[in-house]
Image (cartoon, rainbow, N blue to C red; front, side, top):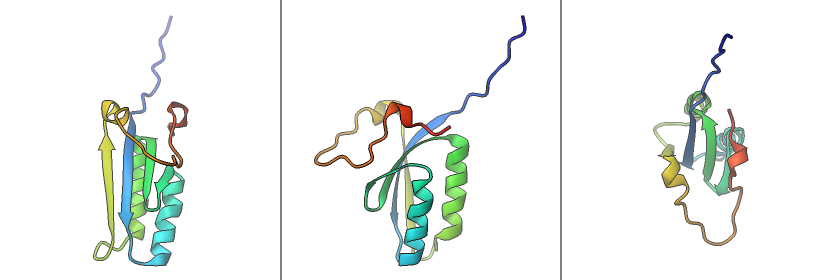
Length: 102
């Protein structure tokens, strides 16, 4: 019997917050983030994605932003931190266990 190893994709949970000064760039940043996660606040997205997709996301955003004017912050959260998230009020776009992008 031959065992076939399957690639293991390390899934990362992250929160992405941004402050983009230009409307056109801000809209482009939001469009890219919509491909990878869910908007939970006006300038905040939650993403459950494979590490390789995170690297692609970061590269795409870096090409759009102006580092002299804009700011994008990636908060990487561990699994135990993720389950400790507290929310108040209306939940917008919360990711479930089934929403992982691999």
